[in-house]
Length: 310
Ligand SMILES: Nc1nc2c(ncn2[C@@H]2O[C@H](COP(=O)(O)OP(=O)(O)OP(=O)(O)O)[C@@H](O)[C@H]2O)c(=O)[nH]1
Ligand SMILES: [Mg+2]
Image (cartoon, rainbow, N blue to C red; front, side, top):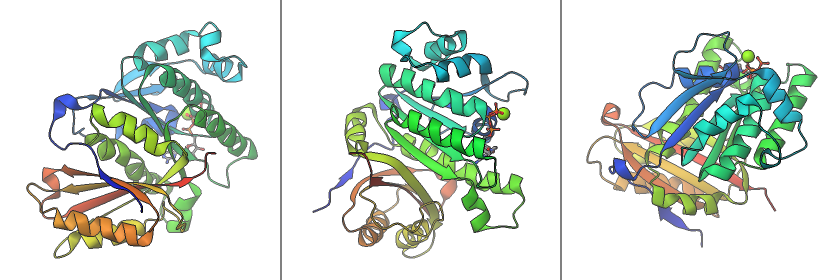
């Protein structure tokens, strides 16, 4: 029998783990810059990059040369003197329980920095998640190879990761201008921070880590539903999300249900039943949260993982 567990708490802010979100390199910075207002004061966001682009949020300046040296080193972070940029990153990262690393892999800054941050975070923090966009098929071979290599290196240290191939943007809407397309995608990439992270309490972290143990990569889908049967409608739409792909063999699924105030949980149960029918063998961890702006609607956010790790 698959497991269905509720986790988290929608109300108790003091039990929220301190959370750091790092938007690294051009893509990472774009994604965090338009994240908007955060639901909890326990979340801090930083842009990380070389200083030529004026930041909109708190900023941590690093040098590409330092990050290249770090990336190329055969030694683990603990076994060698840190570069100046790594030392700065470590001083920041070590103060948090949960760390999100956001970047577009394939570029130098993001690809070189994410694995090192993941390694530092693994030894100082409780949970590390990578939210990583991958280059278009049409980008250079060098970029695509760097992105694969950086992803594989990062996976050694990340507890959770979600990967977003940019090429899917074109399959979804080939005529959408690239800036608009990135905006659509960036909204999806932000969802774990806005939804998953808004229900997690400190107490949930070991259970979440355990749940993700054998999963290399999560796919994300989300949608709104309204009116009668809004839970069912939202879940059905979320399941059609292009970022989830066509796969049916998801084994571990987080579902975050966002409602207005005092919503009946019947709609939440409907949503979970729809998901379970689609993936009968999947274990589901689900959380419920409130958001005043959502009014009469319901949002269902799904993070679905296949069992990859041995
Ligand atoms: N989803 C998404 N992807 C982006 C965005 N901007 C760029 N990308 C993708 O991210 C990849 C990496 O690009 P950048 O983030 O600019 O690279 P960087 O980390 O700044 O590295 P360098 O500029 O080479 O130092 C690109 O190949 C694009 O496919 C964005 O706003 N959203
Ligand atoms: Mg750049």
